[in-house]
Image (cartoon, rainbow, N blue to C red):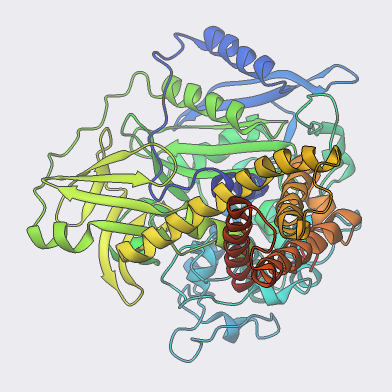
Length: 625
């Protein structure tokens, strides 16, 4: 759950494409597990990751499992196939399984309105009269709710809160921002609300129901939602980026969303459960139809547009650059990343986890496993391209921006950095993000598109009540006019130029001022105020950067760090407004022409930025509430 949030922050701060580029892959797969371990070890060493676990399984059993590296750096305790790792958001898959089990028993309907099942759980939906939040929306992340807030992520009570207490922490985050069942937005409170429904239907604590119904029958006998004495004796430490400093154990407040500890060996049985379509070792736990439903998106614009990729019932359907269609889930906590992925048609899958938050290392490991697991599998066939109708080319070429933000606090960045230009011709769609590499997709019919090396559609063009949309696996982008797009681009460029040029100009006049060569020069504050505004942004950004690994602790609680962040947003707004007021009053009296107009122009841009951030709620933002 945390890994996804960290990736989101990285995306909106740096590159935010509407359609993700195909990843690069190693040239050839490892020839055997000995070479695979060598490749893993090289990756771990390069990124200071202490250890990892892995299991590859097929329908008949475990093909290979291993622990590599250290579970405890200080003591030298090695990772084994029985070492417990935090599996993070893979925990959500058990929420979906539990709901489907009750559906099979006739005790739950996925289309039931949530409010009728758990009226005591607070949430807000302006469309409740016509489009209530339904159970299926919780499971497919189409409620429209904001993700849980930083204070919920930061909650770490060693005496675990009850599910009801956890849901009471921040009910205001559970407000539908658009009509439920339309746009996808990943939200960690959805599984917790589903778990509350399951508790009410079964009369059991959710964790007990899952252990009885799934852990024991599947063979996850050491898996645990809690830091029990048994779990503590088997659990790996999780480490900071230096590979030496351990994180304290994170008692996840939304336990159904991301709290399970499990071993590679036992997760191999879980992989087999999916490959055998709900049956394992001769015991039928869930009907095959339920597993298929779990893997098939049904709500959200992508599903309405005919996409089978995306997010189903807490189950991703994604494509690799070899054309294979993977199902499963990934997960992350502070200092740990995990992935469960399987190919239903090919009958092979894997689980892996590392005891570090190094995402690049984990992506490299994932590529290596996928290559190795599929090296003997024939590559899926690619369907031919389909010529696009002229009306589609005309109507859908243009600019798009994403408008399904996972975190409302970061939407102001995503709106600009996610701008993407789409051009259509022949049977291809060229997607050019404002930042990042271009992507070319091939039409499989008049509206759906596949990747160059992928046989299944991953994007669709459609007209909806939300506007003209480009919907990809996890992103919903709406078409905007060229005028709106270019206005945003121009203002963004001017803002960057102002942030860069103001300090550069200050180097010139600042040195002169230090050597007292600007005595008697009037209106020095006209130059100084824009500099102060830019410096507040620099300090703010610096605080965020140095807090990368302790972000939740520092900003999810009321601390000097979080209060400083709030104060700096106010300081930026105040100095920006003051700089424009000062420049307007000065009217270039006694100032160099270029110095004055630069200060005036920079002040105007900074005020526009202030108004933009105020509109999105950034000015005065309190991360601890």
